[in-house]
Length: 277
Image (cartoon, rainbow, N blue to C red; front, side, top):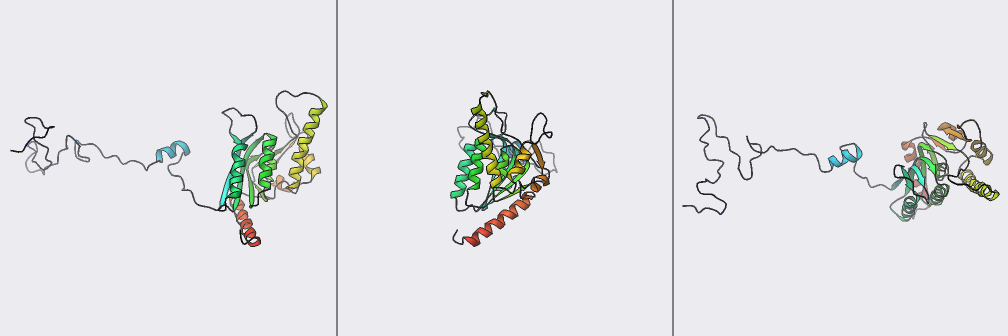
């Protein structure tokens, strides 16, 4: 007689899927019964087999709104995005979409040191923000030894203008816009001559940078900056796509395809000038 295991109870027959089912009608093939311990997926009465999604699919749908995300392609071009409001020394509220200069500047420094990166594409859709933070980012981009191309999508307003012109070649989408206006201060302002002198010097820094890194003249840029009648309760100008190119601010109207082609061209030209790089 077969000894019973510790889990068997008196009178219980060990499970055998090939054992004839006494309740099965004659003439009908025997249907395997589910194992009471492990179950029999697919058999009547057993647990149903669930065909699950690929690992990470639910997370992709939740975070990105799509079941699949293209795999990261190893490329010699690095893309940097400047979106929302450029955050300076004061942290903005949590509901604001921001670009932090303490994130972008170390990233650009790392790109400059990385030999596997041969070109940089800056994509802008910003409303502007802190003047000194924006100028700091623009200065880093302008002084990089690697080819840089900027692309304005949506908007490159206010202090986003210097960043937009900081690359070796700049593009703007046909429907994108750029707002050019004088420097403004938020919060308490002390109405003394020294405050206005400070604003003038800061404004001159922006004007000097833009005119040195684009084809616009200082007279034309000041005209756009102090023009009245285009902005409600303010002075300044909004230029859109082709207008930005005609004024000399941006080099060319185009999108992501044109920007990538130009950047690859600049990379090849630099390789011809410096074969060892």
